[in-house]
View 1 (cartoon, helix red, strand yellow):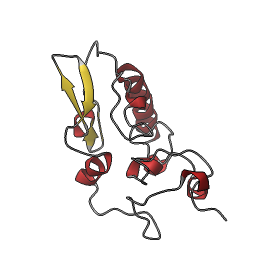
View 2 (cartoon, rainbow, N blue to C red; view 1 turned 135 degrees about the vertical axis):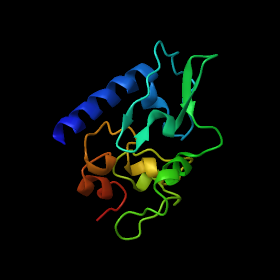
View 3 (cartoon, rainbow, N blue to C red; view 1 turned 90 degrees about the horizontal axis):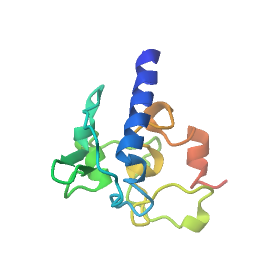
View 4 (cartoon, helix red, strand yellow; view 1 turned 90 degrees about the vertical axis):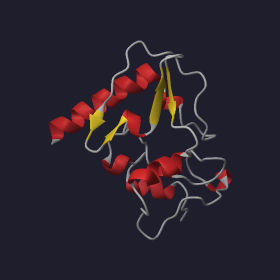
Length: 143
């Protein structure tokens, strides 16, 4: 199991660099427009998901993009319907960035799945969390 996780993280990191994915879901929540053309498209499949679960590829332009007509939360919900964090945490809540301890990605100012979860698993944490749970919650929930 540990070997699969290491392989997964290495593969995702490599693909992220090649595809320029790390900028796809930026703070504004819009797909990146400066993604470089792909030299060699490969489909990574891990567990139940693959790149094609969320991304399309254009033979014409040689670029990858998020599936059309879907927000990041809609993409997540297509495989994870009705999921909520402990304590009935919800997405879609407007956040005041001035009250946040760290910068987490928001989609047009609202909490989204990608605010807490890194869809490509680059952090190496369980449940694709961006930070350790204690730090992540403290990003918005000030004591």
